[in-house]
Amino acid sequence: MRQEFKNAPASIDEVCRKITNEYNENLRKLGYVVIDGDQIPVRTDKNQLLYYLLFASKDPKGNEFWQKIGLINPHGQRRLLF
Image 1 (cartoon, one colour):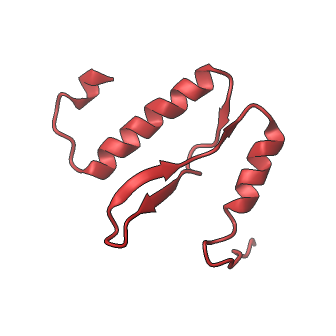
Image 2: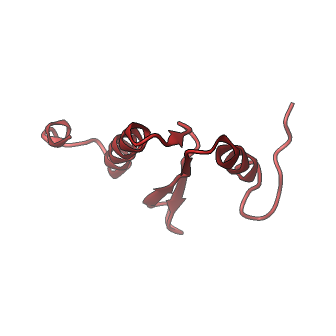
């Protein structure tokens, strides 16, 4: 992993994404199911990335719940599925 960061990254978002991908891969090696693309970026009021919120579970039901929660925005509005 250190080798990946020898070259200066283009942005802090890129650094966070690389670290998140490495973390997800380590979770998978431990037997957890991590759904790529379901990480939620948590940002400041100035739109600066703080961290990614993700869910990992060994139980498929847990991931089903996480996906359902992802359909609801922070204001309680649900997305329509077509």
